[in-house]
Amino acid sequence: MTENRQSLIPSARPSVLLAAFAVGVVLLSRGLGPALQGAVVGLSDTIDFLAMTGEAATQFLFITLMVVALGLLSAWAQLRAPFLLKLYVVGLTVPICFVALATMAVPRTHPVMHLLVCVLSSLAAVGLGLDAAIRRNLHAGIPIAIGLAALVRGVSSYLSEAAIVTHHDLATMGDRYQQARLCSTIAHGLLGLALILAISLMLRQSKLRGGLSLLGLVGLSVLSFVFGQTPPAELESVGSILLVRLGLRLSSLPPPLLPPGLEHVLALAPLLVATGLLVSSAKGERRAAACLALVILASVNAEVPLLGLCLLCGGLGYALERRDPHGVFRSGQV
Image (tube, rainbow, N blue to C red):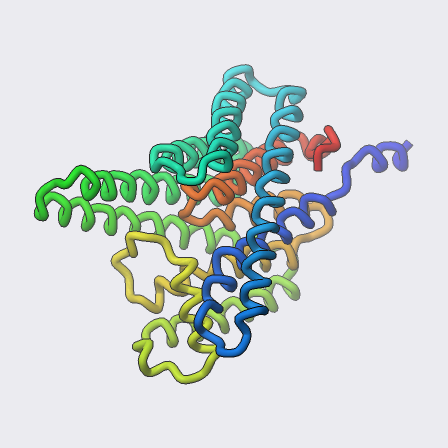
């Protein structure tokens, strides 16, 4: 009887593979590929190949996340949950998928569409995180913090850009920009809180692997902080130049009111922490760790459709896992 019950529990491997693939795609397409452009001489063919690979992998991940979101939506429809919660999930997931899909169909996306992806995915993450937090789950604060961070930064950035586009006077544009930087600073503070919660989860799941992941995170963070504080003209090694350029490519705009070194650390940390969560996850918590890795990967950039889908899928999967540990991906979509 026990063996039959255990056989009904879905494998966590697909969710872990999806999260690991997402980390690799984000690193390649948003960070490493653009950072290599013009940084290394004599490798133009390799860099072009990496760029094309990154674009193809991004499209594949985008489609995969759309399928996953619909599969999770189907699982939520079969779940025993309050009707209003189901309505909340459906009412946010369906528009996000439609808007995200529309961004693929047009060569130049209107800023309002990016704002919609940001707002809807952030609200979904916050609401689903609150649902998981009701069960006295401390780490449900991760999707809540990330959702709020992305919402604050995304909305403030849109308003700042709108002031420039509508040709307000210089004083108004300057005020809007400073307000956007202040909101970006608040968003990065919330991101830091989410990263701390994720690191505590890493250490709780496996002291050895979590400790090693934390050691690597601290080492790279120190290097990123030191090189980020150094003027670009004084950087000599290719490694230091690539690390700084990687931090710049992953940074969000407008920049927060933080030292450049700390900004670089917060730009690189989501990738590192998401990887650490996957490496250190305990056997019974791998699905939850994979979902949280997707959430953290979105960072404060949910207006990017790919990262907005990461935030949505991570939030849907994590809240579903907390409500029904044996129901995640039962529909066979992942």
